Image 1 (cartoon, rainbow, N blue to C red):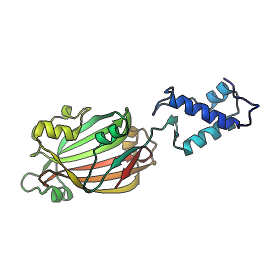
Image 2: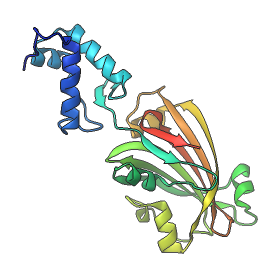
Image 3: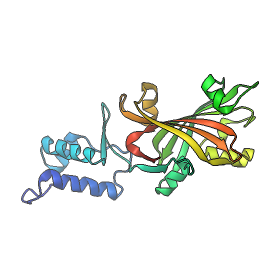
Image 4: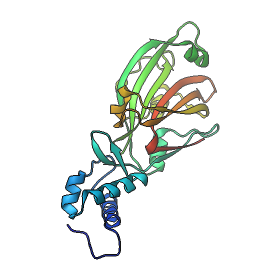
Length: 241
């Protein structure tokens, strides 16, 4: 396919319009890799300089994202989520509100002894054992969050990792253990660079920025319930606090 070289619209603008339409029409979905610069240059009969400018512009607009050594991918629209003192929104709720399909994948579920900062919030005394759950949260199969959950063994005895595969942690607490989370909560947010061991799970480059959201969750009786430590792909997420 050739672009209109007689048009007053610059070639890179025409190519931008073409690629955006292909994304909107579903030819390229969030998380998909687009053709290489050479392939685009040959397909549309334009120089690689034109293709490179097109890609740079689309990356600046948040439509595409470059991943070093891997290529250029379609970026997903950011998920908007409220994290407020009186209205904490779960990941699943945020996905559905934004028209996205939530899912999750369990990496591990182990038992550990609580560290002092965990024990202090959870008010542990004799039994300091915690379930440490690691999982990836996805929206339309695109990884968004790598989450650590710390919850006392005594609150969820005989917890099985299979209960959480592609499921909601909040829903599991409600249906399996009859525990309702409080709508209130305390959270902190900070910015960091993604650790190497997490980058592959979130399909990001080492050194890309991430948000760290630490949440301290109570039950409906306002007793401490669990701690959530989320490593969030910052370019795919927006938080209201």
